[in-house]
Image 1 (tube, helix red, strand yellow):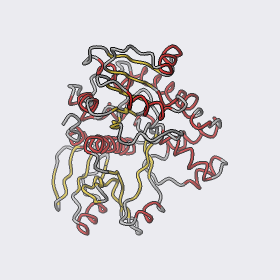
Image 2 (cartoon, one colour; image 1 turned 180 degrees about the vertical axis):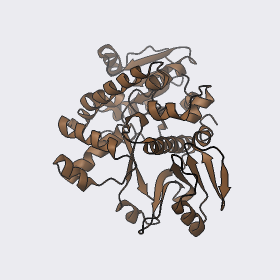
Image 3 (cartoon, helix red, strand yellow; image 1 turned 120 degrees about the horizontal axis):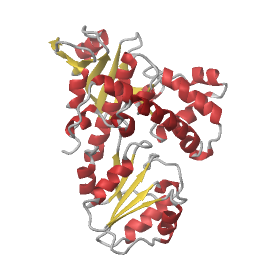
Image 4 (cartoon, one colour; image 1 turned 30 degrees about the vertical axis):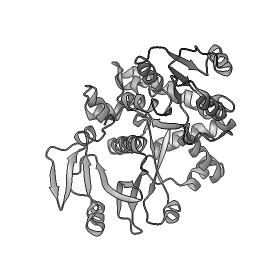
Length: 376
């Protein structure tokens, strides 16, 4: 399946080095190889391959190479220093694309800063908008059951999607998580992952999780930070005018893979919307550099809205998610009346769209299909 970020990445390759990060098996290598087709003498090298590793360390790729793709390079000791030297001394005709499953921009490893030398692009699972853009049309149930990772999303047999996911989770735990920062507590990490699959869309209590797992709250927090760094989960913090106040309140947690969510249709739908919103904000920020964040709203007396898009600390749009409720959520009405923030309520099963008090009630899938403009 064609991915829609290729054009934007190719444009940026003419300006700087490009770092392409995203979850494991989300399609980064496939996208990189499709970009290679637009070059005369590209070369792909994967640090996980012993022969490629030698070529990388000796910088022995062909001198005629016009696009150098370095996959999983963050596993190389001193990779930032290596990239800095490579970029600063590269011939004018050489373009450099670096891909990796860990968050390349925040990976905790020593090395010189790459600031000013790269553009970041983040590839996330296929969304309704991206699928529509490339002519793949499936219903909402397909997204809720399969998620957006290419292999289970495109699998003809649902059983194959389930088999992929079991192997995917096992690979995450045994290969990615346990080798990240020398973490070797297999049982605790595995149990945490299972607990989080049950607690999607709920405020995260490190204390409660620590009691369930028998480990310290700070250890739970560190493990969740690792899950974030590896693009397995992401946190949505409450929005507040004071950043300090916001950080002192509990975040909500979502999975990049909706298929990992253990819950009813409403919980899966909220996770799908969260992932689509996160992807949309990443696309915009990677394109223009304007800081954007996904937050949620909650008052002390419990009035809440599932999501709010924040641009440079200013809320621009509220989104409430419902599986089938056709009545406007009280929290959406409250925040719209009090702060005049535009808002929509997305409903999974909705026969007729409507508008009340300046707030729209819309079909979730239709709204998500028009959300992204990745090639703009």
